[in-house]
Image (tube, rainbow, N blue to C red; front, side, top):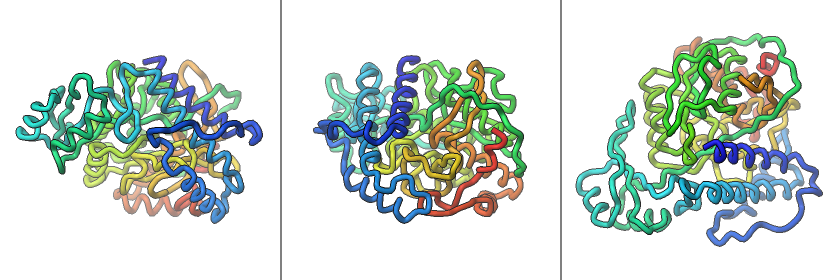
Amino acid sequence: MAGSKWTRRALGAAVLLLAAAPLHAQLGAGLPVDPAGTLGSIGERVGEALDDARRSALDPFEGNVRQLRDLARERVRRLASFVSDNQGAVEWDDERQPAVRGEVLLLDPDAQALALAGARGYRVIEQGSIAGLDIPFARLAVPEGTDLDDALKRLRKALPGREISADQLHFPAGTTAPSGQAGASSAALPRGGTVGVIDGGLAAGSAARLVAQKGFARGAPRQDEHAAAIASLLTGAGTARLYAADVYGSDPAGGNALAIARALGWMHEGGVPVVSISLVGPPNPLLARAVAKVQQDGMVVVAAVGNDGAAAPPAYPASYPGVVAVTGVDGAGRVLIEAGRAGHLDYAAPGADMSALVPGKGRIDLRGTSFAAPLAAARIAARLKEAGAARAALGLVDGEALHPSRSTGRGVVCNICRSGL
C-alpha cells in the first residue's frame, strides 16, 4: 500500500505544481488520446468555468483557459497512472472511473436477484447490511475472465431496475510539503464541538483530542500524513473531540465507496454530529444512500470539492444533496486555481498559505480543498454545540461568512483560524 498511497500523494502534488507553474511552461502538446471518453466535454466545462469566473469578485481563472485545460488533462493522466500502477487491485469501471478490481455492488439483494446473478457466474463475496445504517448490499465477484466494464453492463441487463455499481475509489483532495513556518496564537472564535474525519489513520497518541478510531480497510488504522494534517487543523481550530475512520490502511483499493459508507455507519452509531470528508470520487448509489441516511438522522456531512480544476466533473460526496460543499482560498482570499467543483457550493475556507503539525514530520505546508473542509466542519461543530440544531448552527456559520459569491458560496469561513494553525 505504501507505494500506491504515496503514488496518490505524488500525483496530487503534480497537479498543484502544474497549476503553480508559469503559463509558458504549461503549453506543450494537446490532450492525450482518449478512446474511452474519459475527458468528456472538457471544452464545454472550461467555457462554463471561465464564465463563472468572470462573474466573480474572486477571479483566479480570468483569461486562463490553458490552465483549466491542463488541470483537466492532468486529472486524466493521474487516474490512468494510478490504475496502471495498481492493476492487481484496481481497474476501470464502465464510467471510466477507478474501482475495486473484479467486484460489483448490488443494493437490496434478495434471493431471486442473487440466484439470477449466480446463474450468470457472479459469486457472492459478502452479503449483509451497513452497520448503523441498515442498508442491505452484496459484494459480487465478476465472472472469471470478464472485465469490470462488461460485468456491470451484463448484470444490469440481467437485473433491470436494480441498483448496481462498481465500488469506486475516492482520492485525497490536498497535498503536504515541509514547512519553515512557525505556529501563531489561537483565534478568538467560539470553539468546541465534535467532528469525525473519514480519511487515513492517525498514529496512537498523535491527536490529543482523539476519542476513538476504527479501520475500514486492510491494515487500518495506519498512520497517514494527510489525515494527521487534518486532525491538526481541527485541533488548532478549537474542535474539542475527534473521531477518526481510516478507509485506506494498506489497501491499494482503499478509499472505496463501501469503506466510506461503513465509516459513516460507525460514526452514526457513535452519535458523531459533524463529519468531514476530504476525499473525492464519482457518484455511487451505495454511498449516496449512506449519506442520505445519516443526514436524515441529523448528521452534518462536510466535504471538499477536490483539486482537479473547475473543468473537472463534479466531485462526490460534495455533490450529494445536503452535503456542505467546501472550496479553498489562499491567504489573499483568492479561490485556488486548482479547486474543483460540486453540484452546489456552500462555503470557502483557507486551503493554502497555512501549515499544520504532523507527528514525525514537524510543521508542514498545506495546499488543497482537503484542508478547507475540516476548517468549515470545525466552525459548524462549534456552532452546533452552541445552537443544538443543524439548521440553526448553519445559520450562525452563515453570519460568520465573508465575501459571498459564485466562487465562495455563502462566503469564506474560518479565515481568522489561520492565526491558530
